[in-house]
Length: 491
Ligand code: SAH
Image 1 (cartoon, rainbow, N blue to C red):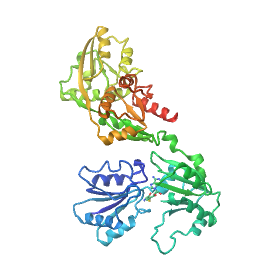
Image 2: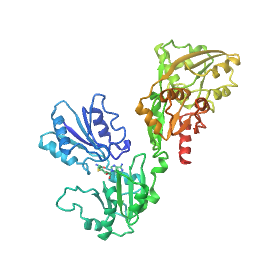
Image 3: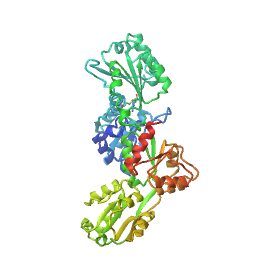
Image 4: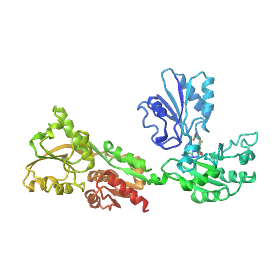
């Protein structure tokens, strides 16, 4: 079969190509490097063989000859789709060319899937266009790390580089930053020429240091800049001041946030956090277990209250099994506890009549104050609070409760708990996430700031001796995210 030499882009998972994702999903074998985006292999088949060929911090990596041999052996097997996944572009300082040569020599067919190279993407995320009218009409990609075994002298022609009429982008150069700056100036590049180092470009921890050839070494040392990082030299660097955009649209860049809600519900919150630049640690402390039961006779009530998106989904599941649809709601007023629940209802064809301003049971009670109710149905979790039911009964309504699901503990593993313990923030979106998370964590309390979706969850935290550092003012996912962004900005 074919071996695919695939670029995975510079780090932001969103910069992986459609073709890369397609091939990862199809692969039988994936041989991957260290610098691939987080979650790049999430789409791989469960039965795919994943082979790590990178080096672990300074340690030895798999020798190139062995990687070549591995690709050839797997490539010869007629049944296998083999993906060789590399950071950035496979043919830009990626040794992809050598692997292609080995495959060609062995008669194994290959395809190359280019990737977004760090040399263009990291500067772009820093607000530095590598070419710019009037500032740079050429760009050179240079290795900053020369192979020490090279006997034929320096592979880099410093004089030519110093004369190069355009932007210089150095890969693998942080450790050589001093040498690079001094050689360029010694060969005639102005000491005042703008220079930047972009560390972990396009990733949540992206940092940008801007100076000149004269100052950049000290600035980078003060900030403790480490690999992976790119060095950019040229007038285009001064555009950073005006064009930097990453930290504005990624207010949570460099911030790690643990999400404790059930995996099935976590994706919306996790995606929002990631889109703001956060590194998300998924640590589902709870699981939603649907309960079996008949479809309630919705038509017999004048008020139907739904308290979560899960409840909406599961209620419609039951209705569907009974051969019913949204028309059963025709005669009833429908109340949703918050916009997420209302959205889920709308997706099932029902527009909620009542959505309170405060997204807690108490808010719903207030919002229903002027709504006449004689028979109400409350569809919810088995372990939910009774405030809504009690308040409606107090008003003289006949109230039936249908328990659609229960939340149960989803014990966290040691690695997950360690990741949560180290996170900057731990989010709690319900009392059950608090209870079950703490059950898993035992004495290992998180070190980061605790963020709660609202007063009920906060009270549960307090009852366990923990004080919430952040409490959302809008008690839904958007409100929680807003509160996190505000808190992170203030720190
Ligand atoms: N094939 C890759 C480059 C591999 S060489 C590509 O096309 O991007 C590895 C070097 O790439 C690192 O030492 C660093 O200089 C650069 N690099 C890779 N990812 C980076 C990132 N996210 N931010 C900054 N530099 C990065």
